[in-house]
Amino acid sequence: MSYTVKSLLPATVIHDAGRPDSPSDAVTIIGFDVIDTSVLAMTVEGKDGQLSQFPLWPTVRISTQYGESLTGDQLLMALVQAGVVNEIKPPKPRVEFHNPPPQVRMVQLGRVEVYTITAAVVFLLWVVLSAL
Image (cartoon, rainbow, N blue to C red; front, side):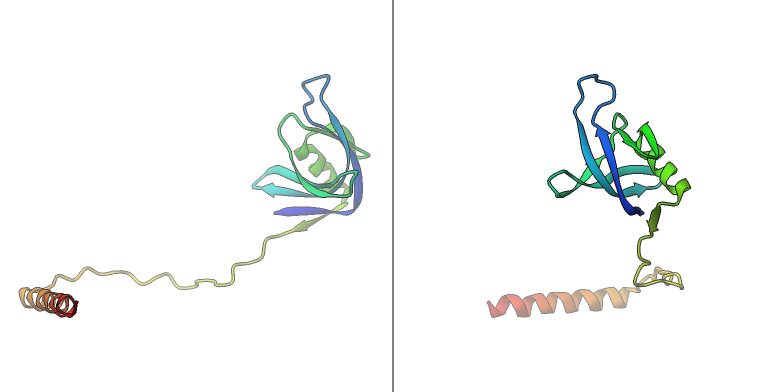
């Protein structure tokens, strides 16, 4: 599942909040990628205008007008509560199976069927190998 912001959201991203000398970037947040209940990455536009995916590790902190030093999950929750994001649901599968697949039954072949199939396979192999 993904979320996009309704209007561009300027933010400051601190790469590792546990280190006092950690680098920070000024970015513009465009969207978030979510799997299950965890925010994995956010799509950002850097100062150079290039779009990139920014992985949201547990040590990453984001400061915006919606909160200071938030994790990706906390920021997305604040944005959803403020109503400034659009949820993008994945498309439905092209084919929907309404009927379960048919059950496979094991059929025991009789002696005549086994000999007939074996003879046919041996004959076909003989024909193919003799043509070489």
